[in-house]
Image (cartoon, rainbow, N blue to C red; front, side):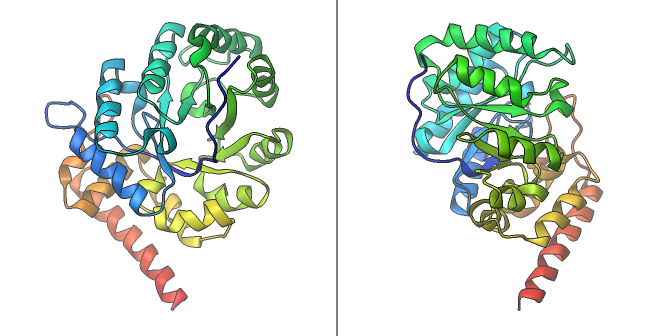
Length: 303
């Protein structure tokens, strides 16, 4: 039996980018600063170690360091912070989950195992069940993470319901990052009582109008002010769609980090954990100009 979940919906949650120093370590001061910035500018919380945060490249020890730095900064872990979990083994999955729970996180964003692709629902059920059973009484507040483009294993509606029934109270929602609106709409209809969150910002407002609970998304690193009305009121914002389209011409993770660096006047933000490549200065200037024009165009129309 899972512990009772903590109250409150996810709302607008930023898939926080992870900054690195010259020696390749997580830059903890920049991480905390970015976390505070997204909270101060419209986000209800943030997720560490998600896809945008290059979570699959981060060790368990690094997770404890990052979570410790955020907790020490005074950010309320129990209401503001989710911990991403992405591992290929049950043991690593449990270790990553324990880091989040031990450091007092609001909950987990839990991806399926990767590498062995197209696993059956039965196989994935056994994987998750083994991890959940090892977590025992600590198990709580799990948001499943459906992102088959990265993990090569998807989470069906049937599997989601099966896990929720087998582990009462543990599964509070699912993040749908497949980018397929028809599939998202099916989840909204079938998963009543769960928080259905979308990763594709272009679908956010429509999903919220149909009962969606908000988003965990990467664009919130740079445009939480534009995203908040979508996540809370289901209001359309053409600038959000235009920004996503502009960024998708590049590697999303490195593009977001470069744009944080532009805002902060800090090119060190462009550093990526290998094997990912950083943005070049030319790419940074081009995308920053495009996004600035998109913002300005919307502001002119509003005036």
